[in-house]
Length: 191
Image 1 (cartoon, rainbow, N blue to C red):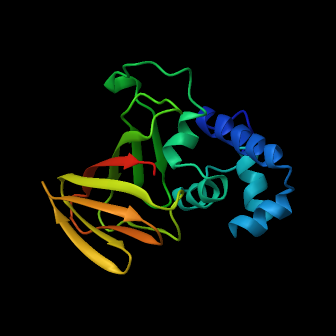
Image 2 (image 1 turned 30 degrees about the horizontal axis):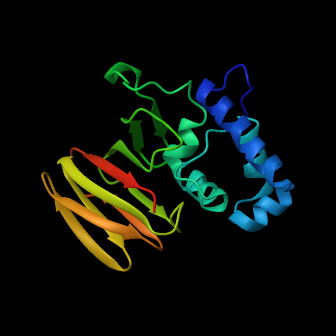
C-alpha cells in the first residue's frame, strides 16, 4: 500500500472526485459497491488514492454515474482551455492491462464529442462489461498496428487506416493483435 505522498497527483484528484460523486448521491461505500459490482475495499482504496484505478473499474463507476471516462478524467484536470498543446494533453496509464489513454480534445463538460488517442501493447486484452453511457457513439480509427474490437457479439478486425463506427449498448472488448502494439484514435459522442 502506498501513501498519498507517493501517489500520482492525477490519482489523488481522481480519488477525491470519486469520493465527491459518491457523497453527492448520498451513497455509502456499500451502496456504491452494490450498484457497481466493485468491492468496498477496492472503492475505498481508489478514493484514498492508495491504488491507481484500472480502466475496467473506472468504466463501471462511469456507468453508475452516467459519465464517459473522458468526462470523469476532465473533471480532475485544470480549467479547460480552447487549445491543448501536445505536450500538455493528459495521459493516463492502466499498467495492469497495457492501455495508455491520451485526452486529445480540450476538455469541457458541456461538449458531447471528444477525441482520445489509445495505445495497447502487443497481446493486451481490455474488456468492458458495459458502456459508461448507454448508446454512446464511438468511431475507432486505427493509426498504427491492428486491433480486434468486439461489440454486440460481433468481432471487427481493424488494420491501419480502418475505421469502425459503433453505438455501444453492452459489453465491448479491445484486443491488440499486432506484435508492435496498436495506436488508434477514438472519437466519442455522447447520445
